[in-house]
Every structure is written in C-alpha cells, then in structure tokens.
Length: 114
Image 1 (cartoon, rainbow, N blue to C red):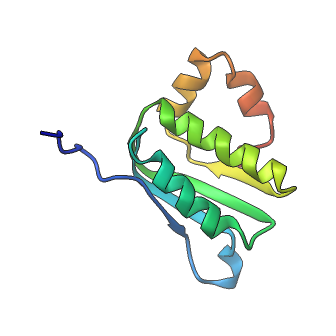
Image 2: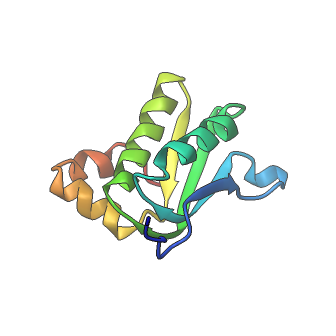
C-alpha cells in the first residue's frame, strides 16, 4: 500500500488575472519526484504565452532535491526559448541542495533570483 503524502502535491497557477501580474506564477504544495513531471507539464503550458515570467515558491510546504531539479529545468527551458525567468521565495531546502551539489554560488549569481 502506497503511503499517503504528508503534504499536498505541488501545483502551479497564475498568481493573478490582473494586467500587472501577467506572467507571475505561484507554486504550492510539496515538490517531490513523484509529482515533478506533472508540475513541469503544467508549467510548460502556462509559461508558453509569456516572454518573461516570475515563479514564486512561497506556497511550497516541503521539497526534496526534486525542487532544485525543477528550478534548474525551468531556467534551462526558458533560456532555450530565449525567454527570461526569475524565482522568488525559494524554500531553504533548495538552497541546501544547491550547496550540497556545489552550485549555490552560480545559482545565486545567475540572475535567476528576484
């Protein structure tokens, strides 16, 4: 029997329908390997019409190293599309994994944090 997660699965949604917040998205729930593929599918669909996006992680309850992988994948995808992205309110766990993989300096100096 599969254990029920302690936190709700991660979702991504547009922050607001107002003109000033176009291209702003909020991630909420728990970021994990089991829900990362679905989250990324949601993200690609939502990000497609925008040349520049802001992704706010303030709604994330918990994450494992999949959280860092998601951030890096979004950054890579946006760069390949010649689009820009910045991340807000990243969970401390993401910084912890960035330090563990010795990419914290590059990560924080890349212009991806807003």
